Image 1 (cartoon, rainbow, N blue to C red):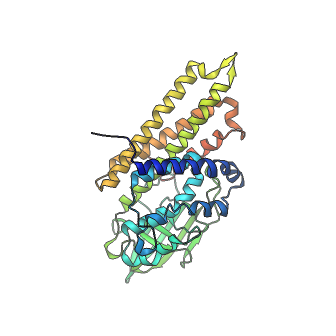
Image 2: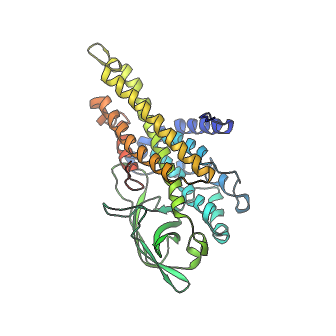
Image 3: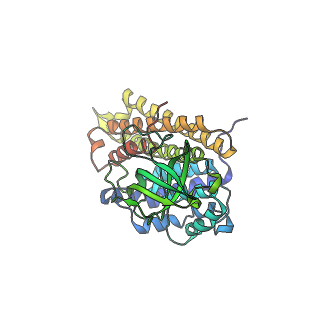
Length: 364
């Protein structure tokens, strides 16, 4: 029998993250967006939650908790309900660390994971996206060429989160007809990191571009060592996380619009009584539930270790399309108020636009 009920542990996680998002993230969201930066105080506060360190094995200094993609999807939705930009900054270290936990060699784990278990915010970054309108996430133009016992990387990446402070980058590149990921230190010769990019949305999240001009790496820099890594599986985890974040953002839009329509009056009655408005809100609710179920299904397949490609594609593509639709309708529901900074919906609209293409475009 299929059940959508949460376990006791998941309920605890959801409530804890919901409280943190409401108390620490939502109040800081607008200020961070306006300043186009995230305060160090926030990053260190969120670091104390142990979102990354608790899921790292004890032998490398972590908490050793079993990682659950379903629980993580629940957690990410709640954080994104507070603010999607801050949620991405809070969980960026996990993208890098979890890739090492799942696919790294013992040597790579010993070298890099302890840094994610310290007392202050520390991050690496996943470099996937490439500039250009026809980028295909499954066919990167960045290439790794064998050279002696190592590799030479050439290419470019953009929209790399936390690029201004990441100690290492996990760069996805084409290698011998397939895909591999390589651990590139930020001081590698031939690597140029741009100044923070100016984006339409997620303005507070420092993203940057990487130029790799024949960056020479040892064989040990290849994720997984000589065995390599299942890069497709790594990217599926990232896309499922994005689907959860887009679900949380969409829920924030709906939960802001409902009380607004009950208070806003036109022709001596709340606009919530207008059929067009009521139907729009109902459709938004339906789509958010659909996004959540698709995300949970993808996360469940990842957790079970079975083929999740189809489920992840549907979850990410559906969330990308519908989160933008919901944000757009949120602006429409607020009318002229949807375009001014007095209300957060215009910020959420901009964030939804960037989130929908953050891992490349996708169609159902």
